[in-house]
Length: 251
Picture 1 (tube, rainbow, N blue to C red):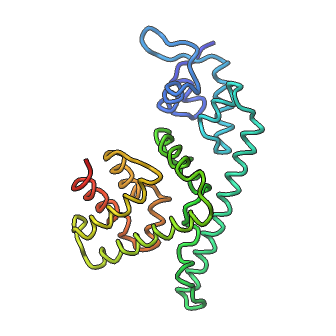
Picture 2: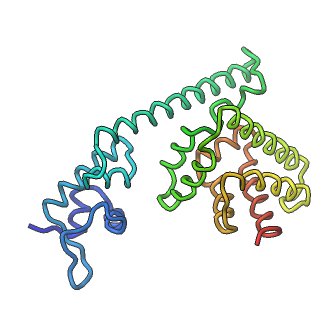
Picture 3: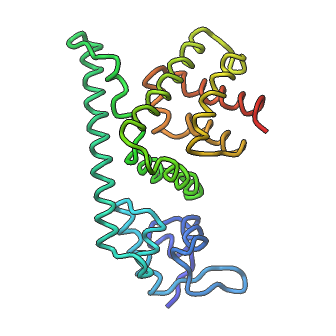
């Protein structure tokens, strides 16, 4: 018996668009494609989709799922690797919870939170990169690969120095925003140029990709939350400053 993509979508709860995407990336190919371009699925594909959905329940990414199903990657090893990423993510979330709790206590006057603890949990680390990649489109994978290659030999001190440099740039950008400097103000552009030079040591982006990153600071909740912790308008200002810098100084 065969099922059309519409019938499979109705049975499984997976949208037809997602099923087409699974076909495009080779995770779930239909049993056959008709002359009219319609995709048809049989029991073998239904069972494979069931396995895909089970592994998606534990947040395994699609490339890993494909390797597991095709016998190129051991499922137990994949789950163990994923468990380590989840544990690292849990540790970061625990730090975020503690940070929020301390901030609430600070605002209620019950405690005074040291300035250097205000952004605990937002620091760049291999675990944070894993989490961001898991929530990013598949097309972003080459950039994360390059970023990991660029930081492969980093020590804890290197990460700390990079985080402090980023924090310093954000503080200076916030000061310019509060001073009502336009996003294309020369002082803002100079600051963006300085930050961009530091970024290029580990990740080289085209003008288009740099602009996409600028928009991600507003569109991606994880990135936006980091800037919102400093000021509710900083994410938009960061985006506008990066776009202005790209327009004025990038080829």
